[in-house]
Image 1: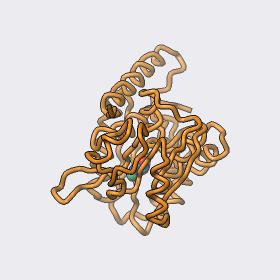
Image 2: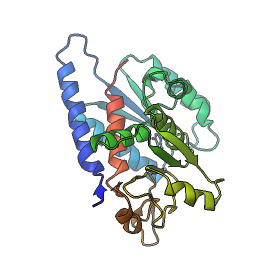
Image 3: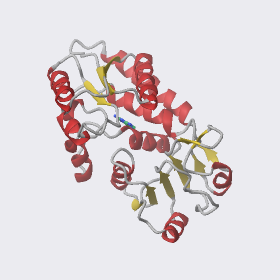
Image 4: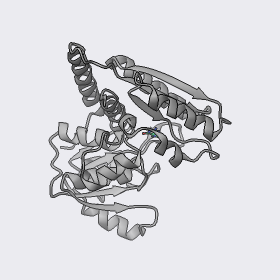
Length: 281
Ligand code: GUN
């Protein structure tokens, strides 16, 4: 029997825990309320939805949030100045710049300008570098952290297992591989230059398969028996229906655990981000 990993239910559990923890810390005289500043540049419809969902989740758990909007033609300097201002504002405890940014803005410069102690996305090189070195970062990137939280909720073993990550983005693939490595998995990374035949053979050996590509890539019954399949991809099919990287109907009967799309990784990412946003350094 394949177990469907319920990201919605697990995320609610985590959000409740964050809320309880915040209520508990309010009793302390030293309590500094978390305040998340979210920067949105331009009018990308998907980004607007993501940012609003983050704000709603923050309200739900009792984290103050402020959305700061800029026109698409904002200069890099204006954006960097705002981040410096937020870094220096002691009332702001978390800063998130929604990606993607317009092409005229250097994303890496922007990420580098955020104080690592307020970098709730965990994208700053200090946080990414610490993850790589096995030193505790201030924040782990939300999506991989949410995936680990979901696997832990279902007691899915990681240590000694062969984990295959498809996709090498800075947001998901790379930190996911590092976090699995940190939990003592044997990690293989596949990406757009991996030969198709190799990909098929590698997937067959995965105890844990994480696909973060954004197109249907895990199609056949090639997954290992009892494996755990995590689908990070989200796109729309020809009928406009939300779909993931994994052909759920074909793959689900062959594996042991699988995340649905929607209702799997998506809500876990938000819950994991709120967990980060509740931390104050
Ligand atoms: N765009 C897509 N995913 C993310 C994310 O996790 N954080 C930010 N800041 N932007 C994104």
